[in-house]
Amino acid sequence: MHKPKKILIHYTHKGTLGHSTRIQRLCHELVKTHGPGVEVHILQGGLPQPCVQFPKETRLIPIPAPFDSRASFAIKHKIPQQEHLRSHFVLQMAQRIQPDIFLTEFFPFGRQDYTPELLPAIHYLHASGCRIYASIGYPCSVDLIDGQNKSLATTRAQIISLYDKLFIHTPENVENIYFQKTLPTKILRQQYLDFFKAIAGKTVYTGYIVPARPEQTRQRASLLPQKHGQHTVVVSRGGGAVYPGVIVNAIKAQQLLGDNFRFIIACGPSTSQAEHSLFQLALKKYPSTHTVLLHDIPDLPYFLQHASTSVSLCGYNTSVQLMRAGIPGIVIPFINPHSPLPSNEQTARALLLRDHAGSTILPYSQLTPTSLARAIHAACTCAKPTKKIPSCWFNGAANTVKLLLSKTRH
Image 1 (cartoon, one colour):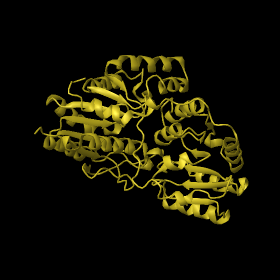
Image 2 (cartoon, rainbow, N blue to C red):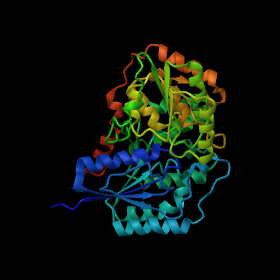
Image 3 (cartoon, rainbow, N blue to C red):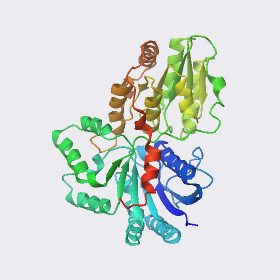
Image 4 (spheres, helix red, strand yellow):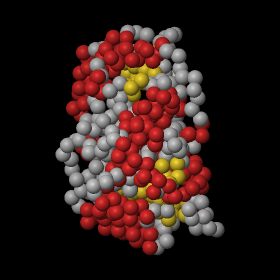
């Protein structure tokens, strides 16, 4: 009997859901398709996320002294204070587990704060013959493009040289086009193209990774409206790390739209206690039997299949599920005012959803109860897009696992 392949994964999330659920789905796919043929160990580098459940066959290993949370989106946030401790722990786990495959999530395209803790383990594993891969949600490389900082560019090129393959979880030649559109200058656009041309030999576009479906898919079916002709509006803000105004304005917008619109609102698992109080206050001020406020929606695809429209940020998970459900949504792309990057992945994806799924882009700066109500009414009464998105766009989990466990070195 062959020994199981040992897979070691490193990831973090910053209080959002996209990074976690992509890794979660990959783990489900590994266990489902290969069972005892794989042994999966997951190094979790951020704060605990109880809402994200990994298969019982996998081993979740929290890294000591987590520092990443929703505070990472603020001007001042906690930065790594115990790099030596974390670095030693990751290296120790790599030496103890002796994996055949090491997979980092988003790094080396992002998560630069994790360089000190990851590099010793990567160097060790590379020297031992372990295959090293990256799981990257989208072709956002602008943090790697810095024409003025040659030293930084050289360091990152050296890190990338240690990787066997870089898996980008989008269809090929789809999101890249929109990222280029968001870059403000011709020079930056050319740097973006040059970067991806330089790594083309290591890059594989897998298609989108769709989140795993929970076992009880209809446990909340009673929340859907029973009244004939009533529109269902699903409102969510992903992990709940940013933009609380989406929830407050949605509660107020339902009042403006009236009884023919039923709102199912998820505030997000990272919602703070202060935000919970704010949302409850809004519900008290604008009471309605047609508004349901939830902590999160564990089976978002089911609700989107039965919805007339949705209101959401433009994160990876929600966007992928919107495209698959084929409904026109109102998307509010998150833009971090403190980020030094000249581009934004949610802005790029919002343009993609506008063109391929008929979605409406509503900037957060223009979000009011009235503007949201108007956008929802228009989305519910207009014809659904006739252009069907290819099903092959959503095979990212199966494609990635197949490549990970390929017998030939890529």
